[in-house]
Structure formats: C-alpha cells, structure tokens
Amino acid sequence: MKNKIAVEETLTNVRDYFIEKGYKVDSFSSNEIYKLKSQDYDAVVISGAERDFLGISDTLTELPVIDASGMSAEAVFSSIIK
Image (cartoon, rainbow, N blue to C red):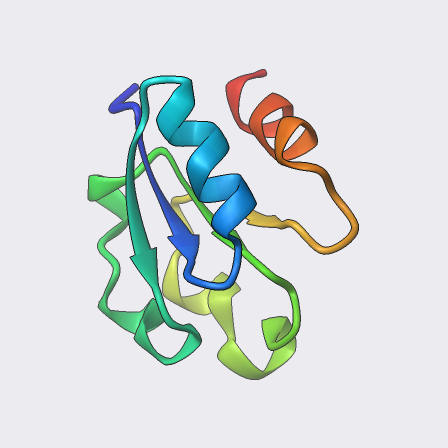
C-alpha cells in the first residue's frame, strides 16, 4: 500500500481526514481525472456528481474508485482500508 490517494477537490473534509491519518493526498478537479495514473494511488475518491459523465471505470480500471456521495470522511476511509 502506497498510503497515497487522489481526492476530488470539492471533498475537503475527506482530504483533511486522510491527511490526519498520515496519507499523502493529491487533489484533482473533475476534468483532471484522466491525468491520474493508477499505479500512483491506493484509491481515487470522487464526489459522484459526474460519475457517469467521466467514464471513470474505463480510465482507472485497476484502481478502487470510491463515490463519496452521502458518505462521511470516516466511512470513505473505512472503505479504502478494509
């Protein structure tokens, strides 16, 4: 595990929580998802607002993509570390 995640820039509570837990966190805007490299991260966390539009499953097939809509930062963390 790399202890590094990418978090959509609107999810500041998730970003801050992971930083508190010792993770390296990179923020990205929704139009930058295609620039992420799956081998660089343990997971990508998105807000869910544009999930279907982005075609994320095609872009990051080897990487867990967590849709954080309706989830607390703690719940997002738990879903990644399990």
